[in-house]
View 1: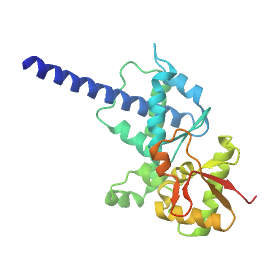
View 2 (view 1 turned 60 degrees about the vertical axis):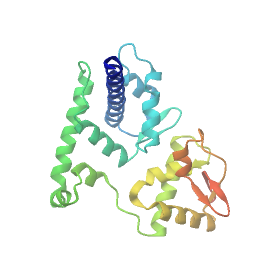
View 3 (view 1 turned 180 degrees about the vertical axis):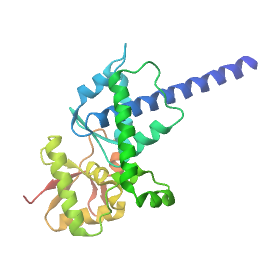
View 4 (view 1 turned 90 degrees about the vertical axis):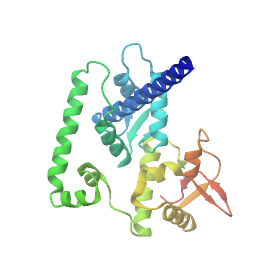
Length: 245
């Protein structure tokens, strides 16, 4: 009985250590991505910076997939971008977590990235000014308030934002005018509710601005399908194609 309990305890400890290591990899990925500019960073360059001795690019595949599925980053074949505000919020939470620590000595680049993060947080806190009081009331940090875009209040505003996002994703990731709806939704983020996003995207289709097309996402991931659009009449729509120039 004692041996069995000991084995179970060891299994739990091993699982906990694995989870902590996975989270640490995600935090490092977000930190380095942010330090490299956060937008259109070459995946090879980012992975090279992430890898430690005896590690390969494959050791970070799960980290990329997890962060993409959680809406913190956008990944193409060759480039990676930080999705705001989700990516910054996850980075901040990870750095503040007591479970996160560097497992070995860190180099100058990592130390300087942390210093840069601390300084920018200080600047954000200083520029919030009166907003600092509001942050205390809402429980939001200065970085969350300063990075969070304003909510979208009208269809016309949504149309412009959606087209800007469409054009950026299409250009940056060479999507050949077939942009995944889940990427548009995640890039716009909390600026609009899920139901309002669906309604306004369908309205853009009705106005011959976008054509929403069927099919499935590249890896048939359930969360990406959920972030697409499903209607009773047309079924699942996973991609958007712009009809107007």
